[in-house]
Length: 217
Image (cartoon, rainbow, N blue to C red; front, side, top):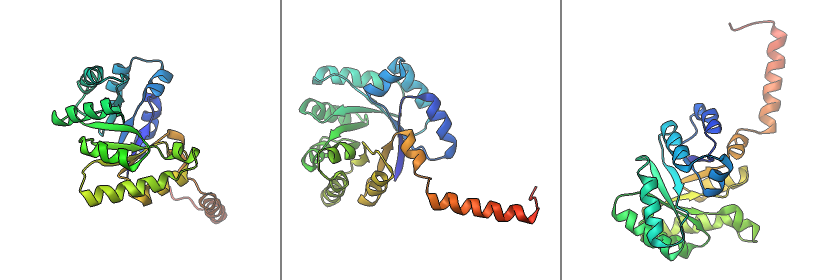
């Protein structure tokens, strides 16, 4: 499963990139606003750092303006993926971009029916929101399983990009359910490596090594 960082903080991206775990980046209007910077500048800087897909979101709600915004975002760099809402206008824009060879990420997906429509519109990625579904008493990971089954059965090429993942359990469930990729806040990505038994085992190894009085270097 590919891992995308869900952030617009360039310094955070620079800090995590050396791990080799970052396959792409997703941004949204809230993250851009939090950065306090111009969206085009942020996206261009991220594209210069990360080789994979970089999602940049159109903020318009009508088709015509979505297309204009998407064209401007896509012109920033060849790796930009235009992020669009799962509405009729968003799906129409998705089809327009798909026909032009511009990649898209259809976001705010909460049902299998929506995922089907996005795939039929030619979306590159579909982003089901796991955490938000859980907030409303539904099973977000089950939605990913169902979308995976549908896409495999119908031979849709749209990739499942699990979103709204808030903890390690969400990430594990998304991977097992068959998501092609997951977008994670930096703190969730960093938490994946942690386990109390790992820490306990390392402490024991170091204590035993200290008793030998040896040095490898």
